[in-house]
Image 1 (tube, helix red, strand yellow):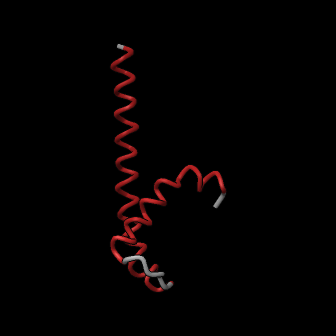
Image 2 (cartoon, rainbow, N blue to C red):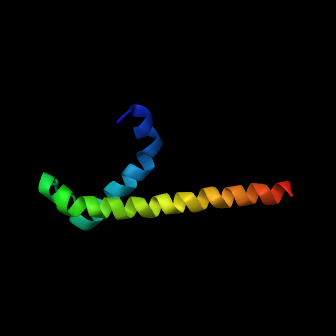
Length: 69
C-alpha cells in the first residue's frame, strides 16, 4: 500500500477498525480470527461505505445538474 492510498482511505480504515473493535473488543486478533471472522465483517462494512459513497457522488452530480438548469 502506498502512503497516498492510506491517506486517501484513512477514514474508511478507521471505520473498519471501529467495527472490528465493536465486534471483538480491544484485544489483539490472531491471523485465524482475521481470516475467518474479521474479513467478512470488514467486507460487509466496506461494501456499505462504497454504496454510501456512490450515493453521495450521485447526489452531488444531481445537485450540480439542478443548479445549472
